[in-house]
Structures are given as structure tokens and as C-alpha cells.
Image 1 (tube, rainbow, N blue to C red):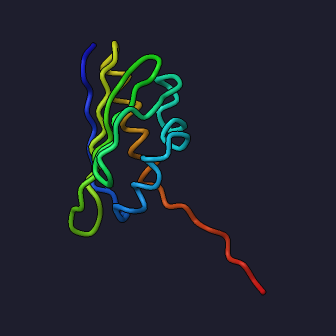
Image 2 (cartoon, helix red, strand yellow):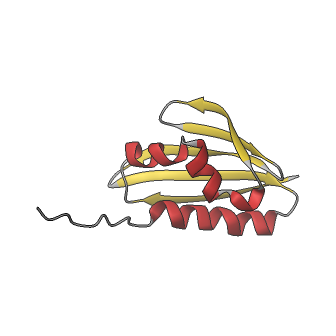
Length: 104
């Protein structure tokens, strides 16, 4: 298996991103193309290691100026497809989630 890596600085706080990547269900939705995943190791607020049916990898977070540097890796048989999936993971993590306004 070959390793693919994608990285990007996202304009979100480390705690906001950590909440998503350290939740097995949320991370599993993002990594669904690799099959059902499970978190195998956590270094609080910095690294999540995961394994799936068709791949394994890590998500690493580090504060970076006005945002958070996110590095996602995957070890899988098809590195080109893995790179596409990892780019999609970063796109999803970086997307703005609008909350509806509530009126009293």
C-alpha cells in the first residue's frame, strides 16, 4: 500500500476541527470511501489515527496563524484515488456550516 497526503490551512479553530475529526462517526462519514473506519489512536487535540476496511491513516492538526493546518494521510492500494478522497475530506472540513437564525 502506498501513502497519500493532503494538507491545507483551514480558517477554523483547532477546537472546532478537533470536535469533527475526533468523533468516530463524523470522521467515518468523511472517510466513507475507505469503508467503515474506527479510530485506533488519539493524541489529544493534535492527531487521530484511523483504520478502515480499505485503508488506514492519520489526521493531524496544528494552529497556523489565522487558522489550522490540517494534514490528512492514507495508506491505500490506489494512491491517486486516495489523494482525491483526502482532498474531499479537506474541502468538507473547511466548508462553512451556516446555522439558521432563531427568532423569539
